[in-house]
Length: 92
Image (cartoon, rainbow, N blue to C red; front, side, top):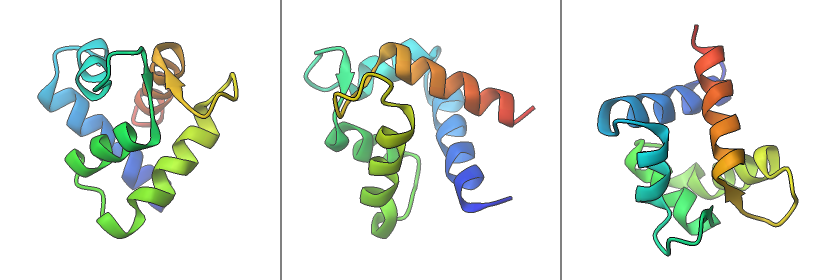
């Protein structure tokens, strides 16, 4: 299992074990309630998923780069849901 898969697996475990739904997880991390996750909000998610502090900034940038379909530098609900669906498919 590569580093990316390990990180995505940790995120999936966090969401599955601590939140009833992906929507609940998204709402929890969307601190300002604007319907989009900023890099700072994603770093908080990664911290709670126990991703090493040294790489959290890099990983958050890569997650935004990989899932930000509208190129606004943020991850909205649809983009987050797409990421969660992809993580779920990869773990099957």
